[in-house]
Structures are given as structure tokens and as C-alpha cells.
Length: 53
Image (cartoon, rainbow, N blue to C red; front, side):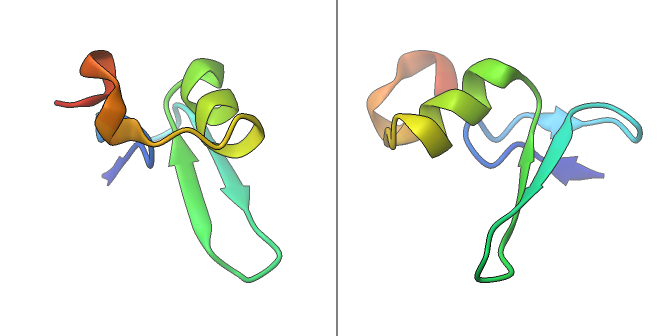
């Protein structure tokens, strides 16, 4: 079981998405909302109440 790289939510096997960066770092996401906020917008999850579980 893995956790979302943005909101730290548990991911069940077979759900969510995986992004592999050029430097080899693997990022797991439970939704497009989390993926967009971290990768495209470069936001810090500590600043969002819904991302702090």
C-alpha cells in the first residue's frame, strides 16, 4: 500500500496514478487534483487544510 505524495491519503492497490520524474523519483497520486497542485502549480501541501491528514 502506498500514500498520495500530496495529501498523504492511503491508496488501494490498482487505484490512483504514478508519475515518474526525470530524476527517478516516483510520485503517487489519488486524484488529478493532487497531481495538478503538486506538479503543474508547484504548491506546498502543508498550506492546504484538505491535504493535511
